[in-house]
Length: 402
Ligand SMILES: Cc1cc2nc3c(=O)[nH]c(=O)nc-3n(C[C@H](O)[C@H](O)[C@H](O)COP(=O)(O)O)c2cc1C
Image (tube, rainbow, N blue to C red; front, top):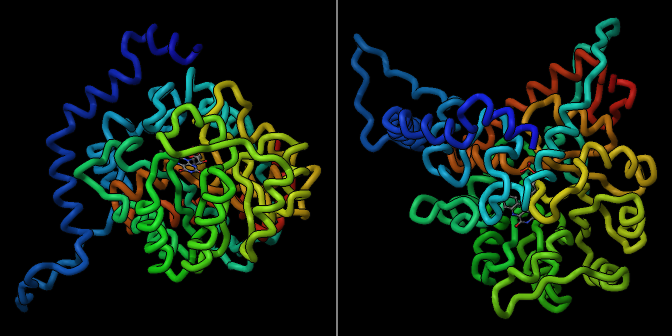
């Protein structure tokens, strides 16, 4: 609430600011969009033979500013593509891109991460660092994967601008280009055909993906596990924190909390690693391991399911203190910079997921946009590892936290 008061005092709320910025910049944005489309085109329609006097110009490199401008043009007003994605402007916008209710859970993710500061250390010999980690037998070039984000029409408002097939292709393809795994979503209201569209992309990228399933009935989940096995994915996850969305599920769709026995049955039903997504307490982290989960995602679903949960960075160290090394610990919530990633690793995560940030990359720049953002995070991670004396992303000391 303090955030809003500050904005009101300045006479212009962030919502209004983003709206006026978007309108006044619309012309420039449209132009940038056209230019960007051209620079993204895989092959020019008819290459003009370069003359001896004028050597062929190289296609302009994709720039993050252009990706974000194009993303804002397509996503506005669902997402204002704020300079920092902190959950203020979009509070309460679910469906949409925001956090549920007051938006406090989303803001807590951002605030919890902001509180963490790093000890800078430069008296050492760490000048080459290794950002790779191995998760479920897959070596990732950086400890960042795309989070599962779905709802191209009902969350992102992209009807007529981007299809589910284009979106998942951008997300998984961009992650593959950057040497990591992408996650595929499962919306409560998504019919099986939409799920199948995502699995087609998983197949296209040779299974280098993790697929989420909503906590539907056991029968429905197992039906989808079989499809995921067939698509050759690395692992599957159930976003158990979507259980409270039952009231909003479409007729014929059920989501439900799961008992320990039901979770065990799911783990036993397949040889694929099973990840429980949406763990926020130590006791449930232990129970997930007890149920046979190969991994957990410490996550409050980007603040989209329950209002007034703590920030992920606040609960992660408590969870890691009890279960580190016993299961793969993933975490998410407002991941954008390399330093965000390093902080989460120091707090106990083995790797992180980036949701809204890479969503913008996918919408604004397709797979090249996603890869561009991931590569920027990687280069920032390298810098911050050197400046904290961290040689490997597989072993990040808590002592780098101030
Ligand atoms: C528009 C949108 C759609 C999402 N859809 C799903 C989903 O279908 N399944 C899922 O497990 N999580 C979903 N999430 C949550 C993300 O996987 C992730 O937990 C969250 O976005 C991380 O926070 P961040 O966006 O601040 O990085 C969604 C998030 C957003 C913003």
